[in-house]
Length: 187
Image (cartoon, rainbow, N blue to C red):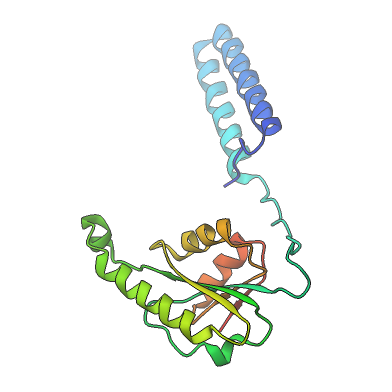
């Protein structure tokens, strides 16, 4: 869905469309009440079609702002993951390991997520220890229970050049590629 309020210019354009639609409805209602109702239905349908049917803007391509010898990788893994050192590759110089605290719906609703956070923290620490060394700076973090939200949160504090998803399914990889304007790969 297209957000008509992404910028000040789009918000102003949306306001003009709403005002024009209200004027059309008022004039049509002045002519006849049923003409006003028909005009209201058409105006609302037109605005909805404009909001829902607008083309998606292409994802913005980001250029790395890191120094030439630095390659920052955001590694996203599920709780219980191990053995990623040999699969990560040699190019990374800084790695942040994010492990989402995956909780079931019942656990999330009742607030009983402590065990899931502990599992995620243990996995993040183990992966950070496994990947550390050889001049690679590694930090482990526990992320939100929604993996895409966990990635977004980590990107706010860590300027990654690449996102690496460990043992992710095809639909999640596609969602991550659509949402983030960084190279997304899978181990």
